[in-house]
Image 1 (cartoon, helix red, strand yellow):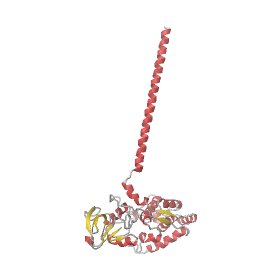
Image 2 (cartoon, one colour):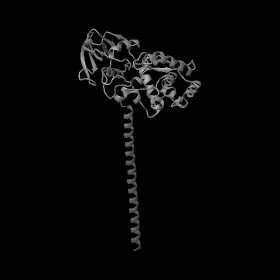
Image 3 (cartoon, rainbow, N blue to C red):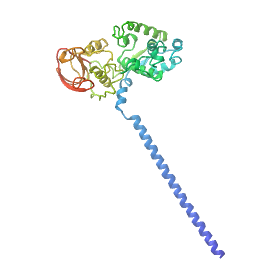
Image 4 (cartoon, one colour):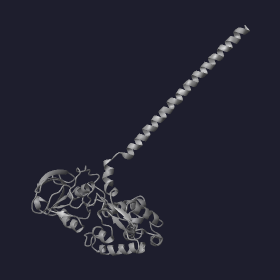
Length: 362
């Protein structure tokens, strides 16, 4: 009996050992499967993140196209004394203690810091004006809204948009000093300036800029490699960008749905930005020429086509503007335009024959 009992015990031990081995094998398999699943999940997550970072989203490209190409800025720094002067004048306002942040934002957006700070000081009374303390918008960036509706939750956001706006609409076009910026930013004799305050804008900003930089740190802005600048006289080589009425271009102050609104936005998307302050279409050629754009009588792809008042059936009060998208010969071209067939907000194309009163902004 004892021998049989011992034999049973040996068999039981063998069974337990075999069971333990099997369990260990299964456990190892589970570890392997778990590791493979985890690696798979990590691979999927990394792939998704890469796609999000690298995918060429059209809207993002449209919005950033002019601000990521081109101009390099050197100089224009604001040193210790200049920062102390700004802080002294900013006491009690929204920008107190934010001098270093202002310099950081200026450099990030390729704007000379002394120019950026001088315009801020002039526009917002050193951060003590209502546009800074209430609207958090010290550079009075309007976009497609009125100035009273253009508010931010924090002043840093207003500064960021102000710097981007200054680069996109001025620096990238070679307008890099108060004297060059003034006629476009604060035009003398403007309809919305009955007290002629704009006449003081250039000397005021220049004086502040000099005091902040101690008169010795002039900025140098090189836009020679800027493929999105005026491209004077050159024919546009790309395809017409897609258009969305919900994304009419940054800083577009023209009346929504009108030909000028569309022309400004589509030129910005093409990387050939124009001013947002040229008013009615029939005034565009003269104002463009005054700002250094080439204006001529030969149609070229990508050019703004200007029809004077009444020319070719254009409105007698405002004239008309479209964008040349194809040239058949010197007298025949195709335009993309808004507010002709179908009314406001409607974009259409048509063939146009040259006639008296037509010109082109390249």
